[in-house]
Length: 227
Length: 264
Image (tube, rainbow over all chains, first blue to last red; front, side):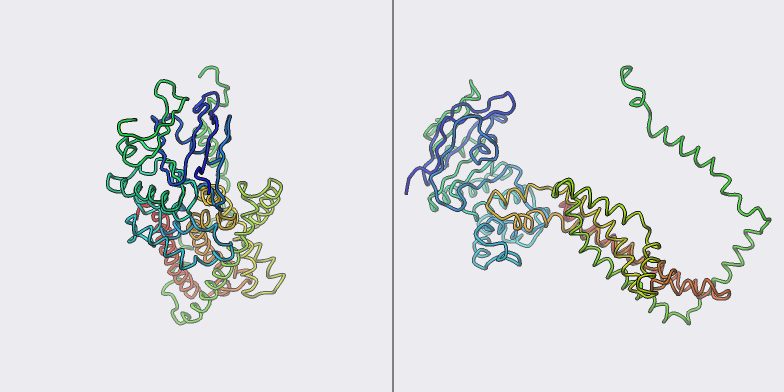
């Protein structure tokens, strides 16, 4: 099994005439947690969406080395949950690709339910299993979106500010779960973060926007006080 | 401001209000009546005097008629909801191609143009004077409205959850079932409840042309000179049923709305 999961070669991205990323090259290995760091508006979301293939690259390419049925899964900043559905069903919708439409027409397999409940237990949502998502707080909904993507088990998990609405305790638990996921599943996590303490604590590598030249991004190994 | 064309500078609410007043005043001749010197107030008092007290002896048969009315409304709303779900997919711009949207919307416009009473007359001609005629009439009539409401719900639905599930590898059907439908379901159910309330009212009147239900009773009592106290009892029972449905329907719709908006 190849150690490298995803490579970016001379990636460039722009919105209109504005270049957000120019000639970024990086590689991410299995088990690694990568932090994307940059000020607001620096292009972190655009870079993640470019890697996910949601938007076209202006230059360069990404190469993935995985045979997983779900190579890439993303936790979006705006969560993208079904508001009129329950917490449990929203999490379970992450496993749909593993089953046919016919199998999921009337519900989900018990095994998947068990996994979903276990994730919700770890994320403190066990009492809200059958509550409509629209009635959850922003922080709860954020944890729910994370649980859905974790249940999906993508090889490359992209997370756009996944702890922006969480308090310190839940942010630490959640980032810990993402890091553990990468290590246990031979997957990798690429995650945009604002809190530099969290970056120091969890990241193996950092992809950082250059403060002097915003479209230039640098790849650094994480060592204390590097950021 | 000066460079704007004159029609953009128009105070549209003000202009339409003046036009409305002109229409109202030019319609004053409609108040003339027959021109005969009638004692309107005296007539009214004599007429309403015969309403009271309501004749409670016909309560049993009135309730049977009302139950038939509710049944007509219930089954026609159910059938119309199913037909509307399919038709609304064709009428939603975000789902179907333009040619299909055009054809489906034209069809729905035609259905809506025909009032429920006319649908009832057509149905009575088709299947005779019975409650099936009422069901046919109200099914067509409600489909015209429900399909329009449903298609608007489809068009205004947030598609992000559906797209998120597709990006997580689900099939289009699965993304619809678990991403889009949960957001649409409460809105669609709310429209169905409203249509049921509306249809109970409509089903009461279509009996007048022979399409079953309590309307037939109303017609009989109105046509016999000394039965206004029976007529008033039917009206009273209808008032109770419609008020009850209005109240519970509004409660349920409000609860759905608040739950979806995260207020409860």
